[in-house]
Each structure stands twice: as structure tokens, then as C-alpha cells.
Amino acid sequence: MAELVLSGLRKEFAGGVVALHDLDLTVGSGEFVSLLGPSGCGKTTALRIVAGFEHPSSGRVSVGGVDITGTPPNERDMGMVFQAYSLFPNLTARDNVGYGLRVRKQPARQRNQRAEELLDLVGLADAAGRYPHQLSGGMQQRVALARALAIEPKVLLLDEPLSALDAKVRLQLREEIRRIQQRLGITTIFVTHDQEEALSISDRIAVLYQGKIEQLGPPAEIYGAPATPFVAEFVGTMNRIEGVSDGSGGVLSDGGLLTLSSAVSHAAGRRLLVLVRPESVRLSAAQSVPVPGELVGEVASQVFLGAVTRVLTVVAGLEIRADVPSSVAATFPVGARVRVEVPREGTRVLDLDA
Ligand SMILES: Nc1ncnc2c1ncn2[C@@H]1O[C@H](COP(=O)(O)OP(=O)(O)O)[C@@H](O)[C@H]1O
Ligand SMILES: [Mg+2]
Image (cartoon, rainbow, N blue to C red; front, side, top):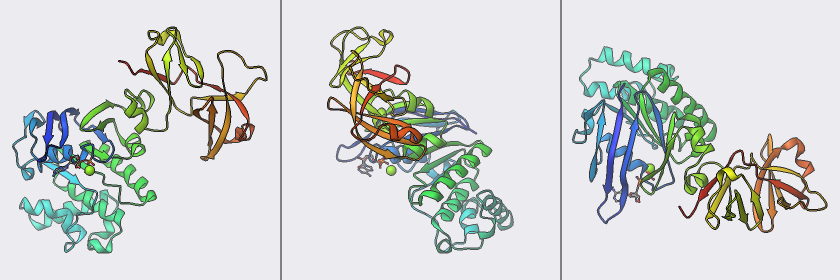
């Protein structure tokens, strides 16, 4: 177990592409941190620097308090799993898992025993003698995970290990990765572009955008209190309502006045972005006589999502999505006039002029 510290990591590639801008991240001993962000934001570059395959333009990496920035990859004590199944095709599952131990000159008997223990850990005890082409994609990734763990690494690095798998296997394997990681207490960085995956598996998530960490925090915080418009947009579904502060807790939007709370009052005239999740928005039947300060819109569409139905309302041209229990969705048919409430609870207001 060891703490992993990335400090001031910067990576500039030939041609002037800056893939990482002074990245700081501390992964606690035994902690599972996801790097979450869109394609091209620098996730793989960060991971490759930690693994030692890439050298940072500036900055340092340390494990357990020891600076390893100049240490070659094979001396770093790190296990890595990639998106593409990177098993040796001419070796059995057992020999793939034992490969790192062979390099470390461990005798065959010990090596095979250890490999079989690890295959057992990932649920593949029966497949030790099979070759990669005799294994499904999910099984191959299990072998890759076992291989990464065989050398008892201080740090486990996973670069989109699930993205080539089909949905059901992906779910199973992600739960298993988490279970094994917690059981071994191994310090882990998990790279993904899939927000749901990151939310479900991590102790903390670092949302990465254009080589910078936009927000770092536990999943509930990333989801419930996105710190920037990018995070709000990238993680989950979010209603975005732009408007101008009235100076007393209200926001003048295209759809009308949102009366939020004077507790979050911004100076009059500031441009604000109101962020509210569909599950926080409340719908009810509109009064025949409009009540001042209420938003009234029309239902434009419904999408059935299982337990809830997402209702798209249009309030004076402004789109606001609301999730309602599917059992009451029939109360809000397409074309119906509805009252749309944006409660203060669960609503975030970002100051765009800040
Ligand atoms: N070897 C390289 N040479 C030049 N540019 C690169 C190289 N590797 C990555 N990049 C660039 O760095 C940025 C980050 O890439 P990458 O770390 O692979 O992103 P991600 O894994 O988040 O998709 C991208 O703009 C990519 O094109
Ligand atoms: Mg990548």
C-alpha cells in the first residue's frame, strides 16, 4: 500500500500540443480514483507518465514518498491494464499471469501456484490452460487484471479496461474490479470516459478537461455539486438555465423569473447559470389563472426510462426536463400545460461573470 502523488505534471508533445497542464493529484493509500473526461483530455498521457512510459515535460511522480520520476517502467512496481486485450497470444492464461514473475526469475512451481491463485481471484480457475483466442473478451480482461496483480504492485493503473466489452460483461467486471481492489487495498487509478462507470466504482473522481482537473471529489459531490459548467454538462443529465440576477435571489431567464433564494443572492445584473437535475424539477397541473413568479410551460415530449419518465417541457422557449415516476406520467401528456418548479433544494447557481 502506498500513496501516489502527481505534482505539477505538465506534458507538451512535439508540435506544441499541451496534453497536461500542471496536474496535481494525490491518490491515498488503498484509494480508488478515476480520471474521467472526454476523449483527448489527457487521461492516457497522465497514466503513461505514472507508469513511466512517457516522461513529463515538468513535474514529479512519487510513490510512498519516493520520487520515481526518473525510474524506468519495469522498476516502478506498477500493474497496468489497457483497453485492448494485450495478452501474449502464444502463452496460456497461466503463463500470461506468471509472466512478470518469470521476468523476476521466480521458479516455475511458485510462479504457477501464484498464477493459479490469481486466476481463481478473478473467477477463472478453470481456464488456466487456455490460450487467449480460446477466451472471450471479458475473460481476457480478467486474465490481464490477474497478470497486473501478480507482481503485487504498489499501484494499479487501468486505462479504459472495460470499454471494448459488451454492456453486461462491462457491468459484471467493473463490480469485480472494485471488489478485488478493495480486498487487496491497492492504490488505483482508473481511466474512463464513461461517467456512470466512474460514479459507480470510485472513492473519488478527478474530472479532466483539456489537460486540467476541473473538479476532484467523491462521486456524490461530483454529481450533486458540479463546480463548473463543464462538469455539470459531462456528468449526468442537467438542465441549464441561463439568466441574470435580480439582486434578491431571483434569476431572470428566458422562461420567466426563477425565485430561488435570497441566501444565494448575487449582485443584480450578474449573468448566472442555474443547474438543476431532472429528478429535482417538479411538475404539477397549471392553474388556469397564472400565478406571478411561477413557470408555466407545455409538455413537448416524454421518454420512458423505466421507473421514471423524463418529461420535456418548454417554458417560453426554454427547455426544462423533469423526471416523474412513470406511474404518474400519464398526468402530463404531450401538449399539456404544466407548472414547472425549480426548487432551491438540489439547484446550483454558478456566476458566469466570476
Ligand atoms: N505521442 C503523442 N504525440 C503527440 N500528441 C499526442 C501524443 N499522445 C497524445 N497526444 C495528444 O495529447 C492529447 C491527450 O491525449 P490522450 O492522453 O491520449 O487523451 P485521452 O486518453 O484522454 O483520450 C490529445 O490531444 C492527443 O492528440
Ligand atoms: Mg486514452
